[in-house]
Length: 71
Image (cartoon, rainbow, N blue to C red):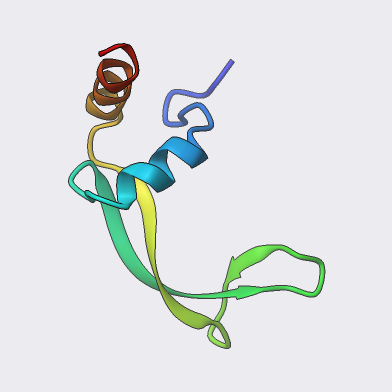
């Protein structure tokens, strides 16, 4: 069961969506690095990357996705 402020894992579909729109996501520029253990983390030593950090409207995205898949 997911917590109230979490969403299901939609990484692939969100990546495709971000290829043509950012309307439903909050985007931030963050310094990101990959650690020696392979973890992605915010770090002053990292590269400045545009990151989707939260949803503006996850339900609208789910509705959009379902509509695209069935039509």
